[in-house]
Every structure is written in C-alpha cells, then in structure tokens.
Image 1 (cartoon, rainbow, N blue to C red):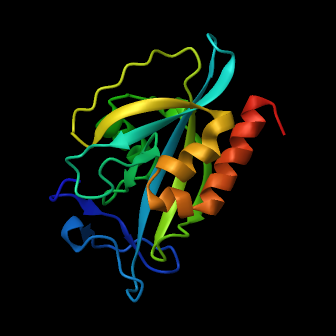
Image 2 (cartoon, rainbow, N blue to C red; image 1 turned 90 degrees about the vertical axis):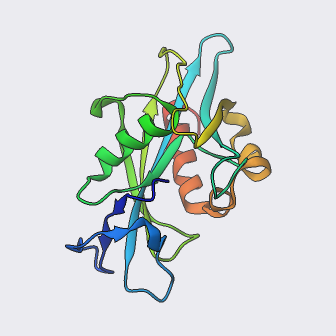
Length: 187
C-alpha cells in the first residue's frame, strides 16, 4: 500500500464524497459515516495439460504490513480517488501480479457489501486466462508467488491457507463459486 494514495470515500447512500480519504486514515471504523470501495479480481482457466478448471491465488509478500504470507484472490485493492472500479481492477492487477489487461478481459460479476468489514464494498471481476501465458511480475513487493488451484480444491484451499477476510467472506465466495461453476459447465 502506497502511503501517498487517496481513496474514494462514499456516503452510506453510495454517493461519492468530494474529498478523498487519505490512506493514512486506513479503512473506516464501524462508527464512521464513511465507506470505501475495493475491487477483487479472480483469474480462472481451463488447463489443457490436465483438463482441469483452475483459479489463481496470490501469496502476500512477507514484506507487507497486513496478511503477510497469507493467500488471497488473484488481485485486488482499494479504489483510488476519482478512479472507477474498472480502472482500479486494471491497475491493481498490473501492480500486484504484473499482468496488463484490456477492459474487455475483465467481466464484472457483482458489487457486494463486505461481510468482514461494515464500511466497505467489493466490486468483483473475473478474467478468463485460458490459453494465456503465465507471465507474472511482482514489481511492488506485495506478492511473493501465485498458484493455480484446481476448482475442486477451491473451498479447502481457502479454508486452509487464505487470509481471514476471504475465509469469512461467505457471500463473495458463494457468488464466485456459482459463477465459476457456470463457466466450467458444472452444477
């Protein structure tokens, strides 16, 4: 997290405030009349070598001050001041795992209220990486590695290795799973 960043700050009715939230203030506390927006991006693919459906997770670097060494979704982060959720998703994917995406490579899934943080909402995106090269560059020292996990192991991997907000984000996980099952052609 860059300390000079400014985040979009929203009123409880969803209206964007005219002044940004300095990153130094961190995420709003439950008592605050303030909400921040974030993005989550989940890469998926059909692996031709194994014919299995997989999802990409990133491991947080030991150098970060939060969730060090824990696994997370493919990419994600806060929406910067005057930035759209789509622009934030493209930026965070480039910053965290070094993948430059075109807008057309992201599929908007849903905007959800974070179950783990009262004053936060999540804009969720999917990206089909089938047939795309695995070229990742961890240039901002937030991520130490990535791993493709078979969809059949999705829940177990999250429960055993992921940061608590993903473990506890039951609605987000349920929606990701339902959408991924539809992409995979299974029920």
